[in-house]
Length: 122
Length: 213
Image (cartoon, rainbow over all chains, first blue to last red):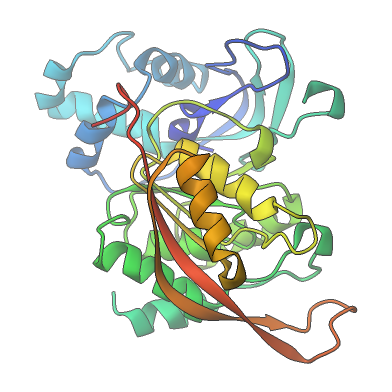
């Protein structure tokens, strides 16, 4: 899974009021090249939760995103390339996503997070 | 990409090896899948450069069709690990990037306005009543631009009424009626192949204030 997916997922266990963002335990991370599309990134910028993305990319071992970012940075090619890399090229292959409220672990195996809830969590 | 080319690429995809009837796993054929995504892009511009989610992605046919039409990011959601495994292999065969999440759409936690378009071939709710409507309800919460879905033609009025009244759809339109080939997949199927009339729908969600444009 890539970090754009992480930016959308939230823990939905019964009783949890704020399940976003899920913390990341990274065991294996891979990088795959994707075409650079600045227009797409500019469009995504306003929709992405930046704090969550920066923390997630750090958890995957990529610390080159600023902790806060503003729309004025979108003119910088360097910034866009870092954003591109974090959002679209980093893959969490093995590890877990962890509910920020309960600590419940959702395993990630072969790149696929398992967000299925147990009966008593629904 | 031409429609014919899209259809023939989708025809190479691996389908369910051991379909599960309780999940109503029926493959979305290349004919229907190619027309669905081709229409979404060419009539409405809902695919190219967009973020697309494939709900109940099964073997990934619709999501991969979106990817072939240059969706920028595609994520497939399914409850069944085996289906996702096949879908992953299909994506690799076509050399396409697609993310997958194993989850139950009825209790999925999801943030924000990132997904533009949802495409889906939901379970028709023949075995489990209302399954297709659960999918539609979730899709209209997550899509910010459009939802494309297939539902049995016999349920047309119900789908329209429920989408507009209960699921916050701004519009619900049948784009065309298609024949869905149901091959003899399961033991209880007596006939070799059956045609089911299905509607291809396009739903537009209400824009919630502060949610995107």
